[in-house]
Image (cartoon, rainbow, N blue to C red; front, top):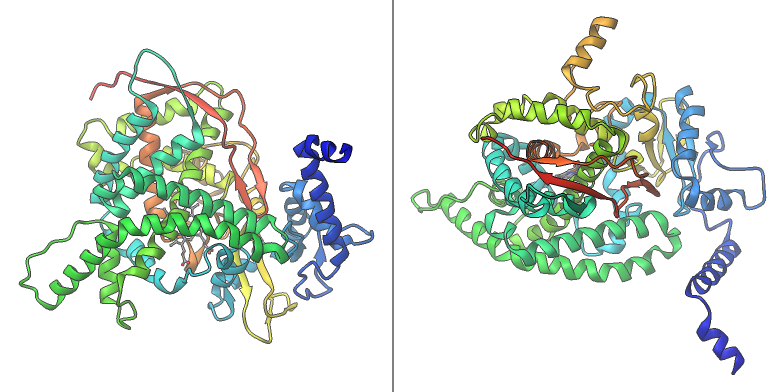
Length: 535
Ligand code: HEM
């Protein structure tokens, strides 16, 4: 009796701790086979591993609280000296981090040698949280983003401006007399999802509340799945936990696909008919569904016969991709309001946006968008400081006999490699005063001054990828949606600075580190008030 009342009244946090300790005990019983070492060569050194019993397991466990310290330590000690190192991981699946001078070699390798898809499947956890997801259909999406999206940027801009105006006014309010407190993470997700959906899915779906809510929930569960299953969960438990998280993901994916499917099926059928019979009267709207359908229909190998799998891949990839933009928008406002208590940067950005968009028509002109030099630089600075992933250019070694690194060391099949993005982005050899938040460091005024100091003037745009700016990846597999993301993020920043006053946060709330991912705080609130704007 006494025992039962103890069991009922015990604090849930104590129960959770007991389960955790028991879990860790069970895990330790299975070590050292627990850690997937991928047979690393003994010539490559582990960082964060001490001379103690169960040293590898304990190094992995320490990663729960290490934040970025292990990866930055490894970067300082080894990457800067041109050497690879082994990084322990909280998922017990350590990986090799290559130095920046190996990047040229890494990006030159074809997918049969180094595969990003293989990493996404296991290390990101896709095969557990979305078991029936196939990468076979995403080439239509990637092609449409690379070709049609860029070609149609003028039309994209006017759609975006229209939607940003509507959703920002709804989310941040239009009352000019009092301050409104909004959750930064939630507000940015709503604004970015609605604005992006207008171009990706068209006006009707973007104004369909059930579709937008389902997309947001899909993105939340997908993001949670990637972090919990792909990063935090010890890899032997991935299949089990993944199959639980797969349920809400499948549910919301189906909800989204149910909305998208009839639209895509109709577009597929009519565009196919138009191709066979040019006299058939039909002109599809200019959105991603049309561009993707056209790419799929025109594909030489004719692999895409039915739109159903395309609809499913489209919703899934977009949920992840739009989330990247929404998380970046959150970092952007936390940086601007958190680092600068005088809001000097915010007011300078407003000044720039007012000059570029000096009439309602100017908002619709792509040439004016390219006057937003400081805005472009501000988003790039946020992505430099807070990239989506800490380990960039993640690839898996594919050939059965492995690969040989440029320094002669041999890696076996299945080894995961990548580079330390936070280390590279904070390296003083590539960025002067790298720890300082300098939103205009990439703007022409700054780069011209540096160029006249060292005789070399180079302007970089937000979308420019390089060996030293890896937030969008680099080279062949770099993000094909970055031009679109750049438009969304810069237009929303310009619209908000012109139309809203804000209050500084006092300090920049810290990001959390979940395995390879940097996550902004989700509870921070900002105060905004609508301004009087003459236009
Ligand atoms: C700020 C926002 C974004 C960031 C930081 C970002 C970042 C990235 C990164 C790091 C990669 C992987 C590169 C690699 O494997 O090395 C990637 C791939 C990709 N991104 Fe983005 N992305 C963003 C927005 C978007 C948007 C809005 C879309 C589409 C609407 C998009 C579509 C894709 C696709 C389809 C891939 C896969 C490319 C491939 O496998 O070849 N992304 N992105």
